[in-house]
Image 1 (cartoon, rainbow, N blue to C red):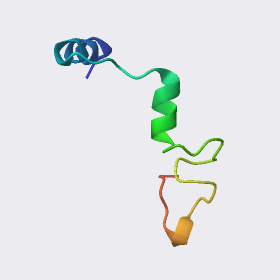
Image 2 (image 1 turned 60 degrees about the vertical axis):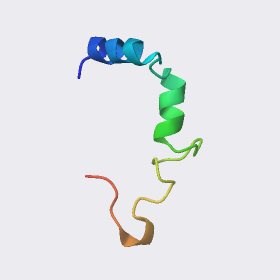
Image 3 (image 1 turned 180 degrees about the vertical axis):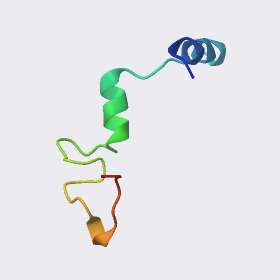
Image 4 (image 1 turned 45 degrees about the horizontal axis):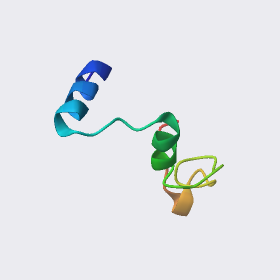
Length: 52
């Protein structure tokens, strides 16, 4: 999906795209200054949560 498509959809729905800071906050689920979106531990509970 292109940015233009996303903006057109938002206009149609009467909504807006999130600002960069809003997007980052949502992507990190409110965990400010965490190393990863799920926290600071790479493998919580022995589970790999990223492709490295």
